[in-house]
Length: 619
Image (cartoon, rainbow, N blue to C red; front, side, top):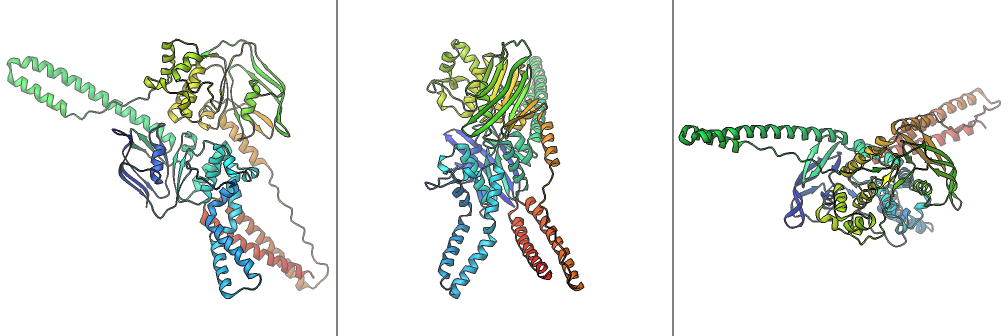
């Protein structure tokens, strides 16, 4: 069954320049598809068209009318004073109305109930139970724990949250709504690694249809079954995840280039033959007709378009020579805000050539750690740099002292360079033509990061510190940044949630957790393996069962009854334990979860009955 169908979709914002130009594709029920393309190619516009928020100029769009569709990029407006908990519970608005009516009836019936009230209450109760009303609390807790929304944040006003926190709460609300078609626009942007991995697991077991716009290559590898890339307003299709897409894209490029070169060689040869025969055919009509025949054949040859290569940044860091072994060392470094300790007793030594990733959940203090290292925040303890160390820093939140200036003027004033040098350096970072006269304050987040990186690369440094360097960058821009960093031979220290980036560069990992930094002298894959091994080795804490004492005295029949009931109680407890495992495994399947929870409720009722019989049998 087709859930989404787009035929010859056209959308323009400037007449004569189509953003989407004859875009066509189909999404089948239950598919998980990644939508790729450079920033500005029309991905978010496509999502807005699918949800009906934006009109289109031509073509056809079909979304299954029997399916509920949810878009994560849109953050709805909520009433003033709404807490995060209110936002989450709005996913159950229908059930909450049923619950409110049930409570109203309970108050009315306290003084005496009519037959009609009892029937209404019974119907409402059945609706509430079948809709999952009694599992609401469990579901909300499960989603919040998975996405890292703490209990104290759930009590805060939604309007007072940061943009990232609002996006995370809205994602939780969308998942609780049990939509059939999920449209996810950069869902991992504001999630830490644990939350991203939880979301991946949720999507992999989700029974509905998923369309995801993402620049997180690792995420696409984990969740996408196929890829649609938007290029020049058209769709190109790849029947696999990101790794497959990369290999197939290169194979298609190589094949097209080979066909193009073969055609050009053939056309060149035929052209040379035509020119010679035309010269010989001045006095020979037969040769001239043959030359014209070859010319017509050349015109009929289907010309393969030369495959286009992406523009690349031609830039590298200006490195400063480093002498000595120690780049920096930290001794008993601690940082607190009031009663809250971010980290304490940090003792680390960094030597030349190391590449270190600083990892940890959101809010653990990674950016504060970097600021303490660079002296932008006060801390306790001692931090000492080597005498020849010069660092360069790309912060997570980019700030320019004069956002009203153009890119060109920013380079002239802040880097003290000549007009030609300013244009050359900006051009190396793909700021060309009229782009250099854009106002810095009007740049996108990705463009601001690119400009700051352009300014940073001009400096001679031997310690490069990056805080979320790939945030807001599309895949092509991430690859440009990675290419520049690969050439850098100094020390690299970075904070990132981009696992593709971490896996590529990290040779040592610092994990900021529970106020301490654990040092792993290895790459990302081995680090993950160590954590998984530690988790598996943790002993499972089982609540000891109370010893069931045999009754003293009594008849043989009563003793047999007690033993039989004990065996049945043990079997029932095992059955409930197995149901708990099944419930955890089915956490993303709403229908199966509802069935299992009902089964568990019935099993617990049987267990309670057996326990009561056991107690009576001992009297």
